[in-house]
Amino acid sequence: MPEHRSTLVLFARAPVPGLVKTRLAAVLEAEGAARLYRAFLEDAARVYAGPEWASALYADGDFDEPTLAGIFAGPWRREKQEGEDLGARLIGAFEKERARGAEAVLAVGSDHPALPRRSLRDLFRAVESGDDAAVIPARDGGYCAIALSSRTPPEALFRRIPWSTDATLSATLDSARRAGLRVAIGDAAYDVDRPEDLGRLATDLASRDPDEADYPSATAAALARIAPELLA
Image (tube, rainbow, N blue to C red; front, side, top):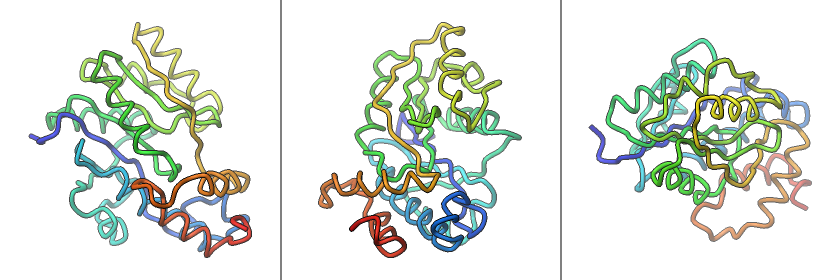
């Protein structure tokens, strides 16, 4: 049984050129896109780790892949995503963490390296304070992170959702309403998936204090090496 009542689950994959951030490869090439994604993971491993919650990487593929094993060492625990689609994989992760004793569980993706830690803390607080679920919307119509309380069945939110579309969030919220669930909605954030998202990321980094504990320093350094013109 975990020492923590809450668990953060990070969904990610190994940073293999040609298999990650393929839309960014149009401007960064495959190697550059993979290098930037690796920096996303390095920041996530540092910023999303405890001590307020337990932290588990759920890998798409081999969770002992050398790069993932190196980035997500202790206090991270590594698991494998199980299921045919994202909904099934989310359900499996939530159920597995609950079986380990977690009460509140939060799932976050690996596509938004500048997501402040306080935003995740707010999701945990919402479900620990009475909301059934809490979500950080993404500006593309999906969401960056979602937390569920221990009484909320993940099937109610993750079945029959059009994943990776501009209707992902609205369909999820419709499912929540049909199930009579109360959902807290946080401030919108963004994913870094498309070439136009790189400018948004550069602007965001420029507005942040590099001395902040959750500043995505690995991402900033990688972007400066790969696309210095964006930071000029």
